Image (cartoon, rainbow, N blue to C red; front, side):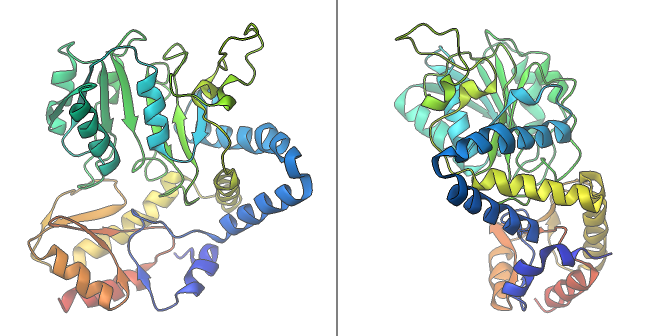
Length: 368
């Protein structure tokens, strides 16, 4: 089965390229182009009145798509921002404790790793980093204000299976549980219906949602952090009860909003999700397509490397070898795009690939 017809613009832009980095920069489907043009046309047609359409139609449509994907009972718990880092800062600013006691894994993405190190350096946080296996045990100690963990580890593709256990510990007074779902959202089916009232969830459009940059989102449970300290003027919309001269906040997830933003990423996200619905493609269906490609790759691969994520639903194969860097460079020289993290070669799989692409990659890997 092939779905290349959904990606004609991206594939035609570099016809000789084999792009096996869907986990890093997923190619954009043609529907995203339609969404981008719609954003421009609305800006031209409506000018400053475009915000009525953005916030009144496009934003709610995007909320509905996210809520449906994650099994969230209330789309109003979703807000959007240019990136998840902005949202993380607003979450932390809503917590009164200082220094903030943070528990996290030792395999978090660069953005959180760097920010948490800087908080430690500044004396505003005390951070404990443990292996994924120890997160639940340490979280139960009651010694932390914030627990932050990725649902799928970005470097190894390992999946964290303890969301329900962490959610059971979460309280509005602390600890708060924040799940980085970027490598899980639309990579595998995720059902948050049982924990939606207790955990924060961060993800976005840049990877498997196929919508590109500028469309990160936060699910913020009601009762957790009513007044973030880092705040923009959009966060006070709809707070009709605020007295003149006071700092009001929206009663739903919009309390975590910032200020004026580029809405084109949200347009692209809605257009892509509508396209998937028209094609009858669900996350489970896409995952099945990718699983077949992954099996073909692993069955045919002869590299002497350690597979770090056997059986994982992650959309990439993580291979540890001292030769990872040279392998990535050799593949890139043939216009085959993968990426490397230290001694780990990551080969990402997506909807725009088919068995012919995998066979061409296998041929190149056999020559390494």
